[in-house]
Length: 78
Image (cartoon, rainbow, N blue to C red; front, side, top):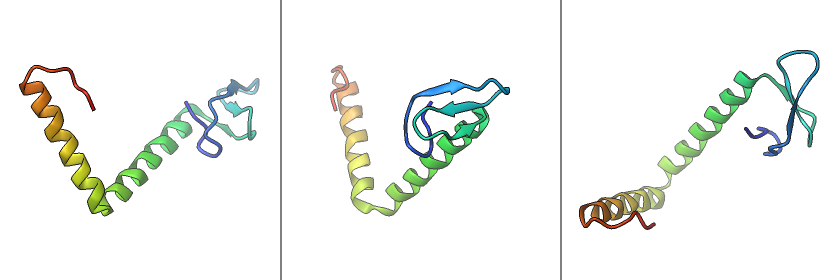
């Protein structure tokens, strides 16, 4: 799990209960709050990619290449 503020992976469980505290910035969150922030960030990134036509072309190109490699029996090499 990563901190939504500073992107650090250094967490420790607090003594008060089910909170996790980021050792880098001091943010304290419950596990479900961290997961919710992660899902929101993924959605925002996907929305940005959807608005970029070059990203969509690259994604389609990557999908075609994966399919071709699968069809030809090759390993997936990106």
